[in-house]
Length: 182
Figure 1 (cartoon, one colour):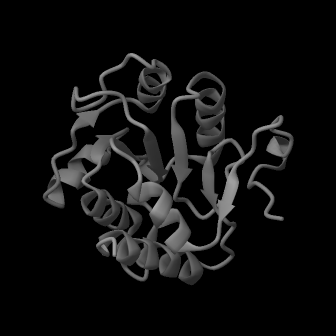
Figure 2: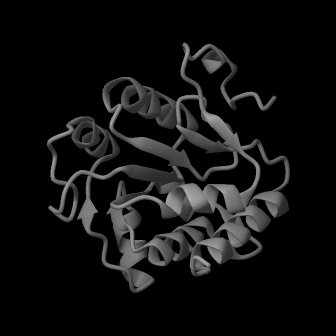
């Protein structure tokens, strides 16, 4: 069993995350989404895996899915530098509040999102935001792509002890997302 990064969040009620250890399985789940949203948190600008920043992995995932992109904090500038124009720039609390509303039209005004992926959020803030979405946005599935278990997400990556394991998972996920369905 994978324990969450913050041990105070072990008891999550009757609904807890499904820990994803296989990138192929996660890719199949994410590909089913009609209106995916990718939320970039500020830590994705600070974390580098063998010289490639986490934000770059996130951009590849979002592009492979055709997902809407939401920049939080100061991530918009880096996304623009990477040639990606975010569909929205919200404060993290603000995007979580919008996602709670089942009648919200989404960042592209095409309808609410059915799956939201988070990368680079602070763990304490991420846990609280995901708890809010778990309880008040039952229409939504959440995925965390950080190297820690978030018990309030619908799907969370396992605790990766080494950056190489996380890097391999992200690269395999991107490869699986780019594959066409057979």
